[in-house]
Image (cartoon, rainbow, N blue to C red; front, side, top):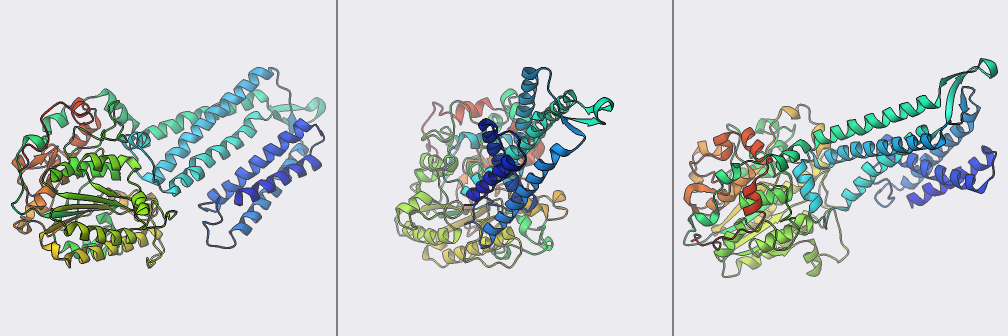
Length: 620
């Protein structure tokens, strides 16, 4: 509806221009004016709405609860068209502007086109970089490449809208304005007749437009290369490191011993949940504690901290900064690296076929396993990961529709809300607990996803900031879910592992916090009802730890009473053990630097399925 209104105003503007400002009535010229004025006025309108007024979802009236949104668009569009018409009417009357005839029409036209193309590419790179930073935070090259090569089904529609309102609108608008300058044949003159002097000739216009295009192109791509760490991507292809191979422990090559009575495991990934959301006096960096319920739960369990005596957690390592990569790190003890020709992550039975994951080990021990998402598991190929590494039952957004948990056409945010997810999870856990096998249940929340989260209709709104409200409500729902689990008869023999999957990408939220750049952000982690004996873990093992997401793999096994020969799996270390992590042994900077580089071992043995012994031969 909004687009139709804007186009109607644009056509009317073109008609007024033809009637009142154009002397020629040639059909070709009239068609040119109508098309140009309609397109340009529409771009200007949406530019004003988005960049000046600061409106999101500018193309959809339904997305705005304000009943005056259509009227506001009409008024803005009218104002844009009036200003546009007045400028078009007055420009030809300015005494210092004259139209000149280029000497070399073909050469001049080629310069105009090339300048516009390079300017457009530069603006696309610039707006695309800003969009990536705003939407995904410190987006790294490996994340960008992996996501481009992985399935994107189930993506929040808001992501596509933000692309259109960001890079697409920005590129079209600024390129259109630049083309008006580059293609114009007007010159600036002083005086008239015999005393006339040309101050800004066509050659100067072509030089200026060429320089502008060149600076925009080179500067924008340099900025993008820096922000997306493309030099690191280059290193991953050119520079090789033996680090993974030298520190890798194959889970199939060491003894992994389970207790006689196997414990159930409930693993809860909390989207973007950070310790940063704690108040400053509790070790966070917010003025008010946004996660009071999680803080209360933390007093009842085990948490590994990078700090001296307050809640802390892990820091993102190379190849772990987004949800799919976090799950891979925590499930396999390995970083998620840029795929080669042998693996694209989105293919069935080809998602890290050489890795032995947590799901593989528990499946080999007779566990029944389920993973639940409120989004589609097809995003990033997670359906292939969980099916090929543990034969999980996958209950995602698509499966929820098939099971009539939600109406077929229902869609909120990435799929459906977390409060619904927790209710469905209760039913599935109850079903698992009634079986005769130990169970492993995994779930991931989504309502705290960038850029500003999602607020359920049930969510209170104590803060002005939407993301703060989403965080507060999400952690309360987690707390209520955990309390429900603790009331169930199976809880006595069940360990709950709660962890933030990665640092939040909600840049707008963090930009409002003064001094955040000097604060070491870390992800929340908590183990409840760990295996007997672990509740007395020495303080030196819990605090001032340097560890990464890949250390979760052996640690979660240890939390359910499993003993691991050597206390390392993949390149991850059991945090309950006396063995230092690779971060503690070699230094965080060194390890991350090495993990950026390519690994022939990873390519040949993890991304591809090596010819070696069967899995689980030493898992007892």
